[in-house]
Length: 298
Image (cartoon, rainbow, N blue to C red; front, side, top):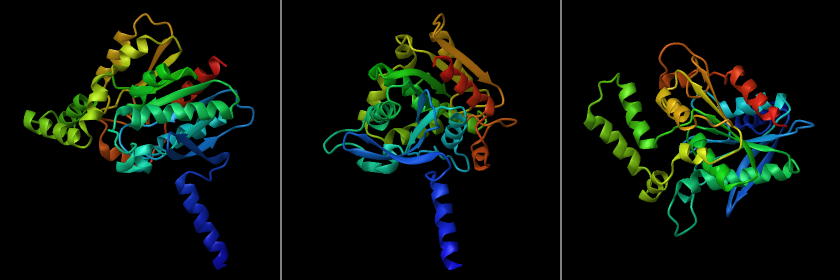
């Protein structure tokens, strides 16, 4: 009995880690000298695959936010549609303050771009050359055009809650939103300065030199942008900036879901951080739209 209980506890731990779910296998992404633990969902007969690219900050492969696990939801949903999915622990989650080579200063490419490219090439090899799409969320969506620009193996992009503006500007707007518009300029500036102090100047400089919409304008591959109408972290203003910037581009499509928050989970009323403390699942409408977009070209 004790042995059985031990095995059950071990299994529960593996399930919580996201590496022992049905149809999934443990994997590793090699990006330079960094090794990133990953999970591969590989349904039989998969004709295409996607790589999931996280939002800002350290994040595990499920992109866990309190009680929600959006990347796990997406992986499970797309796998049932016959699409392979590769998701990995972010470098800043695994290595923390050792996320750059000795003597090198941190940039956005160290945090996002380089590892995503390595993941795309890894999945491309696993699928023996079949199409691979990048699904970016938040910061990952913002950087997706650069990933595609630098990685010709990318067949298309899906942008979830994609910023059109810099992160510090968005942080200031979030403060105002959470304080009901009562935030003083001093309070907003304090938050922005605290956020700026959390990373070296090399990081912010690398972001200042990058415009996601202008980069996307130069791409000819298919791009699908999905926005939640209740998203306060990347609000509707950014959605409209993408719409204006990509106007006339036949390879660009937008979908808006009014009831969804930043994690693509449905709810009611104004979205708040506390909402993430209640377990929810990424909208089936979103995952079906993602699946249709990938399969449409394959």
